[in-house]
Image (cartoon, rainbow, N blue to C red; front, side):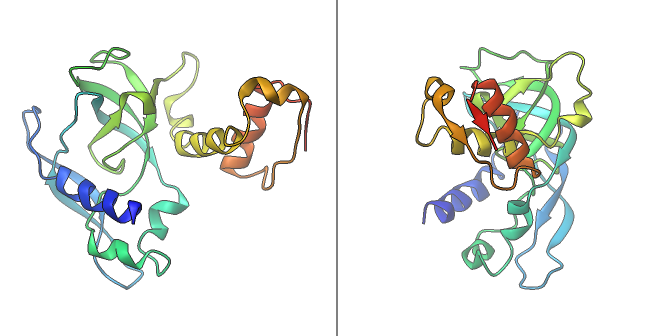
Length: 196
């Protein structure tokens, strides 16, 4: 029910105006169809941003399993709320900031999770869902990190606090995948006693 409500509200934010001089952008969107051919590039309105969000010009983006599974039989309710822009992982340049944003300035190159979909010319990200691309890292190499790392972080801290990990032995199932490899690195950062 919560996912359906999110998708419903998300659909309408695409139709709100923005301060960008042009009002349209190209975006890869889901199509309301039961077939496997559910992707189309279409011209849609540039998404608006809230006070705690930034608008970025997309440079690189990637997709995750959730990005294509939303149109499968596992999520039949989603078909009532699409078309939606595809993707979460994004790298780009901040071009506008909300009134309450303090961590970023126009011109910053950031990576993170896009609230509005990342396979588009512009994307909206919450301030706490993006970070500055570290110096020395090629932005294209970090484009697929945000959602997998966020998932790993949330999973590890579901039952424990960071300081509790020093006494733990942790088993990572699927350690070679995106979430698993991120979880292993986070465990090392948390000074976990042993990681398997």
